[in-house]
Length: 167
Image 1 (spheres, one colour):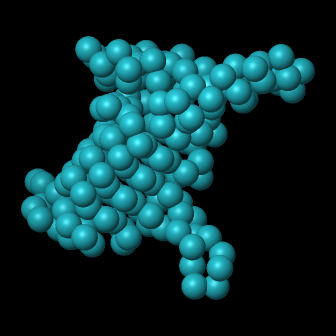
Image 2 (tube, one colour):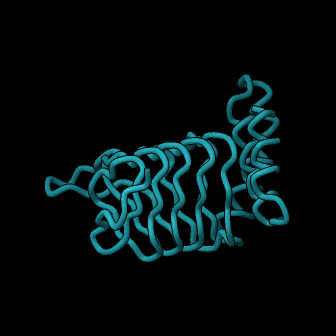
């Protein structure tokens, strides 16, 4: 856990807000995983985390989301990540990005996306549904991703489509 903290810190060099958000996120994860008696004492911090980051800063990054080390956050406003999403190591998230499940025709909800390592997500991107984003992918600003994306590619558009293969 502390290793993730240091890697997040390093990934957000000269980005004070990103560092603050990710330190708080990792501490909230630590609080949530604490033994029950200790967690009861730490509930005020979890409430503080939700109020400050979700309500005031507009960053919905639930503490039970699985995120690899080295996450980069740019700007952060309008960021919504479903708590069942999985984000790999060394990924980049920008403002006004949504990552989550979608409502199916039968009224149930799909699973959330699984995002690989080294994925760079542009601003205003929507990634929804039970899809997988491969490693080393770049997703252009304003893209809507509703189908799985293969690794080593640059994708853009609505719906997102392969623009260029990265070798």
